[in-house]
Image (cartoon, rainbow, N blue to C red):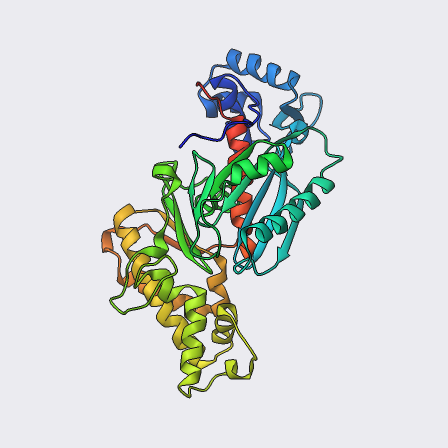
Length: 406
């Protein structure tokens, strides 16, 4: 299928060397010209010429380095936040998040909305998203620089080239939605459609890891389960951006139906909806729990009850975490990462439940793979797909700063 191409993301550079220099400044700025030449492996004359041009184009600005004083003070180079901005949208079953991020990779406007998107029709869901985007556009009206593009992080399977959301296991009535065409016509902006899980790794790598690991993966845990990778310093998205459907590994022979149409998927036995369903079933069979006092509850409530010492909730959470840990162990044995980060929501179950998850992971990995492995719970707030939203904005700006030889 042909790629939707009525609008193109605005490219900020048209040469490889400026693109590489801007990437180095993004990573290490504020940075002096001398250190920039060392870190980039580019000659000092080339740095001087290129930096002068980028300053003239107002893609860079200079700021005093914190360790430089007096008449021989050195100036540090940073990305100019007023060169433009992008807007990013991410949505999940529980609601949505929309942000504006400027060209210094700083969030300058944000709105979020708790709303049950699962049962909505396609038209209702789109209208709900449009309202939040309109809110952000109003907030950014006075920003300097123009909007470089709009990114949509979809939680399901997408056709990136065609700009279509093909289907989602967590959203009803969401099949073959021409996201790019719809959003371009509505907002008259270039639109980039991304798989939500694939955007997580960029946000985690930049905001939490500070690009310090070449081999890592992030496990998404919530209404669904997914994973995303950085291997050998490269973000892995797979064919048609389909990598990361970790939640649809078969992990049990029990006849547990998954929303994808399969049976025995990890998501069907260990994601938050499964945890809540298992707790309801246990209560119906007479088990005692603080959850019985609630008129209704979700997987989040079960995690919270486990952290507060509720025995039933703790047992159900640990059973789910054991399944999750076995699957993560398999990924570690396959990919041999240095760092594995797990979405911060698992921490709501309390330190004992998290310890049981880590124990399950360690029981299922080879000794050779555990020696230098770091297991962590992420510290980046993840409610309402905020990580996906941040990652979508980062991906859009990266694309604008990258040199395209085609």
